[in-house]
Length: 74
Image (tube, rainbow, N blue to C red; front, side, top):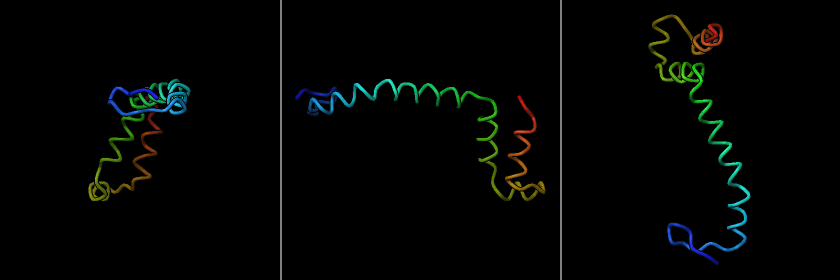
């Protein structure tokens, strides 16, 4: 057994699991960062933040607003 940086004990098996999973977690963080920096993903996040009442006032459904994001390729 050894100590983690937060001073909790970790077994050899847990340490091995952490070492095996580390590159996969790093890859997931990289892909997540790339996705969040994508302009289309940012536009979709902006559409999801629009309240339903505002969409109805403009005569749109959420599906219409989302399809507009995909229609206008950045």
